[in-house]
Length: 208
Length: 49
Image (cartoon, rainbow over the protein chains, first blue to last red):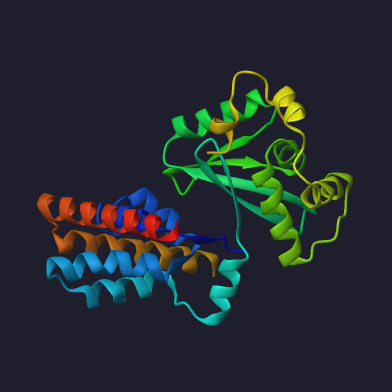
């Protein structure tokens, strides 16, 4: 099965302006979806320079799948649940194949990904880092690790609740069940949060 | 069949590279594009607040 990826303008620029061969080779191996916003942002530059934007659009259409904003796409976009940690925005989702909640964020450098993973490790949260599309790094959290963060951060619980409600997720295992319980519960007392988070991180730096 | 798909993909990538070379964007144009997109992104972030 071909992997589907959604790209932003910087990926389009990397492949079609900088001529990054590695990136281009990685993209043609996948089904690449270009959001309408990224398409407009990319083509606007060509209009601004007085270059042939129509030709650029044709090349993009040949290589990738442009996602125009029909009603279905907008409804899907509304289902995306996001939560912040240490200045990084994590995308939360439910893996139907594994039956648990997962979260991931993308950084542009390995250093940033490691920094994020270290900050999470201070809280006892284990992450997996891997390279994506040759030039990005993903920090990935699985079920139990998402649970640890949800226990600490109210923002994560809210995002999980929204996700669970929209997708009507039924708990399958103990971790998912606990996560859904947490999602429906009020924020934990400050003392508990402070004890778990330790003294090295302040609340402000956690949920920025 | 798999080989044919692979070759088609390579041809597509080669065609795209050819297009990149034919564009001949100058350093100045690249700088303008980067600035423009950074500004658009900044405005996008501001609008989502």
